[in-house]
Amino acid sequence: MDSAPQPIQAQPQPQPQPDFVQMNNLASQNVGAKVLFATDDWFAAAENLLKKSDPEFKPGLFTEFGKWMDGWETRRKRIPGHDWCIIELGVAGVIHGLDVDTCFFTGNYAPRISVQAACLKPENITLGPRLDKTGTAASDAELKAAEKLHSEKWDYLLKMVELKPGYQESSHSYFHVTSRERWTHIRLNIYPDGGIARFKVYGIGQREWSSCGPNDLKDLLSMVNGGVCLGFSDAHYGHPRNLIGLGRAEDMGDGWETARRLDRPPILKADSKGILQVPGNEWAIFRLGHPGLITHIEIDTNHFKGNAPNSCKIDACILFPKEEEDCIRKKWGVKQGHNWKPLLPVTKIHPHKRHFFEGTYLALQEGISHVKITMTPDGGVSRVRLWGFPRTFDM
Image (cartoon, rainbow, N blue to C red; front, side):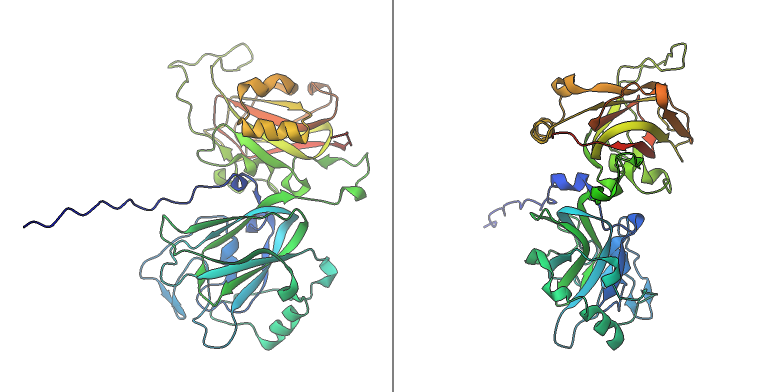
């Protein structure tokens, strides 16, 4: 007799991304984050945790210490204890969530982790610079220097939890953080040993605004000053949070780039100013790090040579926290548009160029808290800077 048919087992699905992944990664090398200490870096150094690029796997590639891996991997522990490292955030701020990625670490991943945090002053950090640590463990002197920070007593953002192996459907583990304190340093504990490919700390930068005077000109949109992306229409090639990153973009991948819109007319037409007459556009919405009066704007299309937008505009408004929550919940629907006022009118944009606007070119001379950046019809922009004076409103 034929055996009974076996039920088809559903393939495990990747964990859905939580909303906090739209925020800024405060622990990226691109924003200045760095590893200050690690107990062990035998197979692969802890600095790999902070890379912006996705993890790679190179079959058959070995170093003198073992299999080459794109992450942090410690040796199999044969002494008491567990491994841990200390990370200095590139931007101090409020942490909303964590992404722990074990990609390609399948039989050698760290089975458990916990995460602690502290807010430290620079003068309290006595750890020296780390050179190439692959194939080494922390020296007695490095351990003693790390012990002075008493990191084992730092506040827990995440108590001990289990991770999953680094297969495609299970490599990402997301964890919400409820604390709303400002943090500067992270202690990542792995129990007892193993590997993690990437470690991302999503949140919002927070600076000490009390030291900033009302006439101090600041980039109020910068992630360093607390700017954050709250919504967007498309991020096919690059996320709009890149617009508020540090410095100029390294390449096109370090900017906001959308897919080509499918509602583009077969034959494009432009008005007398060179503005394309097309039905669609792409947009991204940000909350400023501090409400203020904008006096200077920069739009940079660095590296976008064949795919810059034809035009851009910026609208602005004041949104109170409950209004913002409502807009986010409704995905910034079209009925939410009544609050927006023009800040930068529709303006022709050129490829691979920094554009500066100030004074009478700006259409709004009042305080704002949020901006909507619109590009037509699609394409890529690398950075947007909104320079202005901080102002306090009854929010």
